[in-house]
Image 1: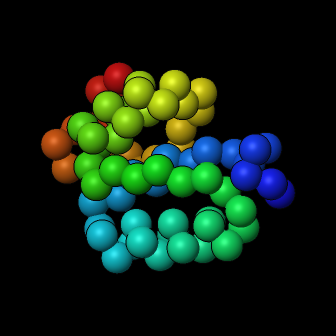
Image 2: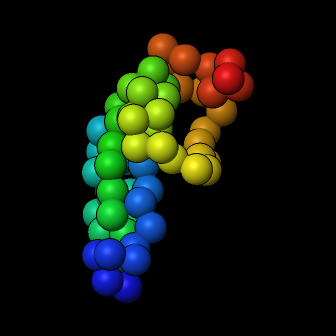
Length: 68
């Protein structure tokens, strides 16, 4: 998978170690990655990046994922 055609994945996780681990695993597979440490930051990053689809846990600090 080349840089140009790799999918962009926004990793949102309040656990820093979990976020780093997931980013490391996905980077090895060739994905382009962005990160956020909570739901509020995740929404801001998703809007700024024009993310078409998200997958997330239901609860994150500072924002209930089901709020929007």
